Image 1 (spheres, rainbow, N blue to C red):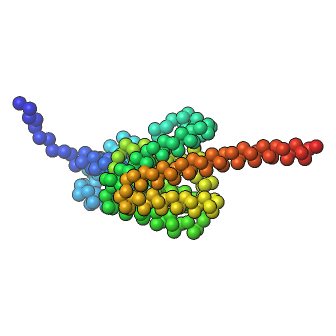
Image 2: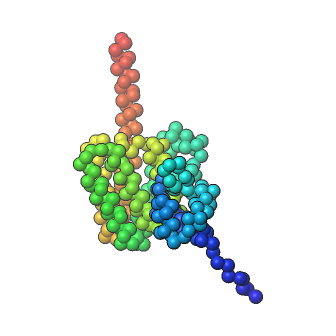
Image 3: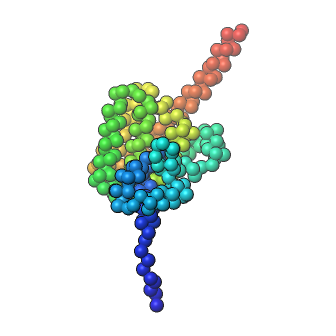
Amino acid sequence: MPFQKVISEKLADAVVKQIELLILRGILRPGDRLPSERDLSEKLGVSRPSLREAIATLQDRGLLETRAGAGVFVDNVMGAEFSETLVRLFADHSEAVFDYISFRRDMEGMAAERAANVGSDTDLKVIDTVYRKMEAAHSKRNPAEEAQLDAEFHLSIIEASHNVVMLHMMRAMFQLLREGVFYNRQVMFRQRTTRDTLLDQHRAINDALQARDPGGARAAVEAHLSYVEASLANQKRSDRNEAIAVQRLEQEAAR
């Protein structure tokens, strides 16, 4: 007979599954601090010993870490998919930059299309909230803040696509971007014309998503990343030309 005894689930195992799902779905992010043991046990409705057992299991699995005197945090597992050797190759060879942008254009275009179709009203409110922060930051002329909000905007779209594989894969890619492996994001925010154009492009993406226009959202993302690609190519040409000009000046001064 195809029947098995019903075995009640341990409370600690139920806690483990709940926290794992929160991490998988991107609700708990790397670096997020969990509530205190007392608060978390009350929220979950379990005893402290059961909670401690669950935390220990999640630590063994590499999902949580305890910092002395600070608490329990979601471990920084993002970016771990790339070996140090591969990261060094990315950083040392410029063609990886343009392959990266091409990859993002494909993935994020699809994510925007999905977000317009399957994202909830709350998902779209999150995206709009981040965009409003971008508008507010624009007048401050703080490249670091603008770059951070730019990343949050794109990740909020990926979150709204409700594909956990894409979410964690793209989080890993953005982590390498934050670390300057592909290019320095802040460089793109220094010139006013570039900053204004980038904000306009993000507005177009947000408008299409709020209108639930899948094709428009995808086209807006693709246009934005094509602009980024062209801007970086122009910057590389300018840097090369300047290096040559410096050599000529040095030679002229030596004559």
